[in-house]
Image (cartoon, rainbow, N blue to C red; front, side, top):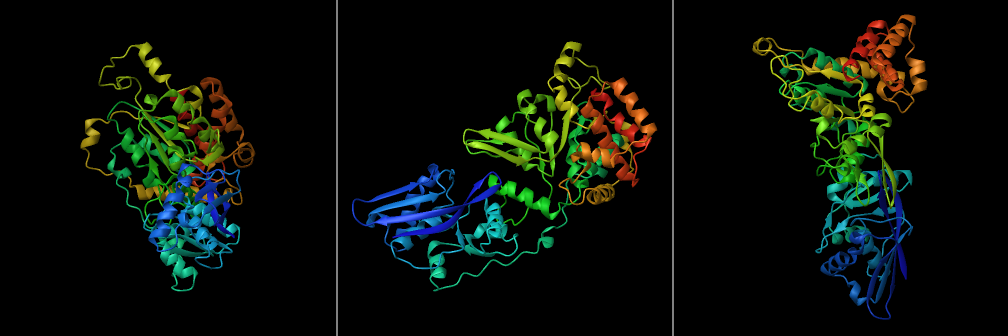
Length: 508
């Protein structure tokens, strides 16, 4: 006799339905084989399953002859301990130790040796797949139940241990379904430790960050040590609008498959601020591994990726930013296959103008020679700098400014302007996959960024004098579109173009 239990496999951010077939032959010596392209963790399931079944007072596999478990489709790589629970149920069904209706039900979970069910990764993509396949009953570890409950129309059964699940399936004792969650209740107010009003001066840099937040543009802050570059970057989340539900689901999926979703968290409702160290490897930044998982640039999706000491990152690592800065995705290729992860983040980079940091400081002498300065600045390639929209000088603050008792504009006021600009963009791109101006391609720029003759003359002068590339030309126009949105003006005028151009000057 054989049985078939449904489970899932997660590939990238998507899930595939897996059929777990268990066959038992009483004759012959004991064997327990798992086939269907399993990894080491799946192969080890036979030992966890055997111990959990024995400790749950059922007849264990070693007393039942030859056991064969097939994970279909066989050409799809299976990884992780998610199949422990369905394998155990399939074995008990096949050996006629229990009987229940297993159709249109999905099971997944890792088994402890005593039969307890432990949490697993990638539950949210699985729940989305279940809804797409019209499977309404899902049995998952209790710690993962909140995560799955954000998908409407599913009956989520939180499982504590193998015995309680069997009691439910055999109609002995019912497991209550996990209560439905109102998504709007999850979006609570977030307190930010870094506030724009804490920063004295630097109005030019604050304005650049406001534009970046409104249009999803990338920023590089250049200035001497102690000028406030890092603090400015850390205030960025305080002026960003709240995540929308679709954005929150995207971010939660990334954290779910990477195993970084906080315990019993239903939804990631706040924009991420990720700040990897400059010694980070390409795999930690981009993602990868034998079976690719998201890296820092995907974990900062719809949030902020802060790269402090920008030139200190390995050049080969920084070159990996080209694709996400341009397309908002990152492609990870391995022998087992190629996967794409979303990576639509706002890059905030910070750097000193030279190795000693004092090249642009009027009060401190620079100890670097011209060759050292050129070598330092060339650590960042032209194509990377060309993809950064806003190049901002952050000078050292004078004592008089630091000693002032006046307060700067609060983040909440800036965020209101950003939200108004984002609302304009939401109406503009309604029905498309574009969210911010920075994501516009050629057709959208042609449609929504019409320039009059005076604007064209200004752009012509800028291209000629600053030797701008075609990419820089279009990025200036997109920044100008955002500046117009912040002022509530429907059309781009020369003042918007002029402000956008001056953010390119220092990098060209």
